[in-house]
Structure formats: structure tokens, C-alpha cells
Length: 348
Image 1 (spheres, rainbow, N blue to C red):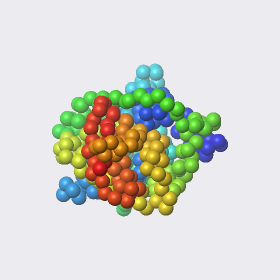
Image 2: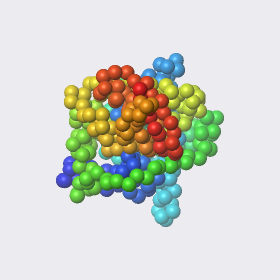
Image 3: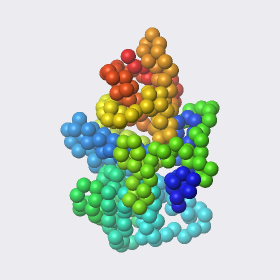
Image 4: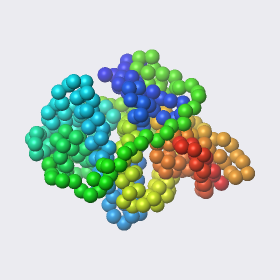
């Protein structure tokens, strides 16, 4: 499971490609795109956005992740059927899904009990985000049993027992969002060299220098900051953002942009030895966030081209906070969309 060449899980490199356009593409399903997410940042923007809106948005996050997880699990089951395989019973399917959660750093999840018709009980330890975990589990439940799952959580912090019970019917929100067709965002292709890869598994060699990967603890730790990261596809974030915009309005993007900016400024200011702005922006591609290139100064200010951001307000906000922290002064930012997945950020 562990590559002897770089010390990372072999499947991460074998199953993904790091593209010159700043994104991580699945080798088997190119429409799937991976990212490394700062777990603390996920919790931060959920909490900060809740504070800005005046109420807890955790249930909206659960709903968005539920929709994504249900679609993903349904595709897995349909793929088995297309290959002539007998769909596994719910208990086996849940066991299969939860067994993989430690590798990407989601947390230690154990199937504690299952009733093939009525419910599932999961024991969770140290999950990276409680709303994201609950939504993910609910989506798998609904794909496996074909019924809506109602959640009951008993625990403290990010550990405890999650019971999912079958319920009749769907909420109006679930019907509306489930009927929407998700179209992958177009990607800007860029000519250029892909990062130097490990000969054993194909993962970028820089990745093992960035992260300590402890599968036994379900922990991916950024070496230089000590912060926890997870590796996931962007569809979950896309679905969550869709729910937030649907329920809270388009102003969500503006709020998230500022939340991300402030978080990033604190993060880069806390690093004992940060790189130059160019070096730190180059790391965006390694993480799968998008490609960020400083173009220099013009009469309008410092220009930065941002290609293929996985979530524009979160990535643009991070670039903004990065430049403020490393430049030592506040900046104003404006931006232009030059095409799908192609943005020009202007700082002054």
C-alpha cells in the first residue's frame, strides 16, 4: 500500500495525474478532479459563514455533501451492474466504502451495525469535518438502500456514533437539488511540464516533502505547519457551494472570498519560513487548487492569472491573503473573468 520510493500511499500516485493547468485529474475518470484541503480551513469557513449569516449553516453543508456522496455511490453501484456484477448488500457496500476513508484522511470510521432495510450505525473517530462526514455517510446510505436517511449524532467534537435511519419521502430541497444536473467546469489546458514524479507510484516527489501520511491514524499532516489536510475530489465542494448559493444567495461568494483572505493571511503569517510569493503560489498546483501565476505590475496594479480554481472565492481569497501576508500590507483586489476557468486578479 505504501510506495517504497516516496513513502506515500501507492494508490494516490497511480490513480491521479498532476496537470500543468494546476489541477489533479483522475487517471481512470478524467472528469473527477482531486484537491488537498486544509481541514482547519474547512471548519473555519463553515463557522465564519455561520457567524456572518446569523445561524448555523452546518445542515446546508450536510445536504450538499449528501447530494454529492449519493451521486458518487450510485455511480459505483451502477458500474458494478454494467459489468455484470451482483450489487453488494448494504452491509457489504458500507464496509467497502468506510474501509477506504482512512487513506484520504477523512477519519477512522467503523461499521458498528446495519439493518439492510432500516438503518446503519457508524462509529467515528477524529473525522476532519463533522458536517462533511455526516453528509458523506447519508449519501452512501441513500444510494445503498434507495431511501432517505435521517441522521442522529451522539458524541463530542469530531468523534462519536452516527445512526442513520430510513425515512419516507424527500424534503423539497432534496428533490430540487437532486434534479439538477451537475456539469463539470471546463478546464483550461496549459502546455508545460508535469512535476517530477516518483518512479514507483507516479506521485510528485514534492508531495512526500509536503506531507506526512499516517494511514493508521487517518492523518495527512502538512510538515511545515503541522496542520491536517485531506485528499478529496472537488465534486463535494461544488455541491456544498451550490446548496449555499441556492439557500443564502449569491452574496455567499463575496463573504467566502473575505473569509478565505483573512484565513490565508493568518496562515502565511504564522509560517516560520514562508517562501516568496511566487514559490507559495506555485504550491497551488501541487494541491490541485488551480494554477496561479504572477504576471508583474501594470498601470492597474499587480496582475495575477488564476487558471482552473476549484472554487473561485476560496482560491482567489487565499491568493489575496498570501500576497498581503508576504507583502506586509493590506491590498485591494479586483478581478476579471477572461473565459471559463480563466481569471485575472488585480491587486493595488
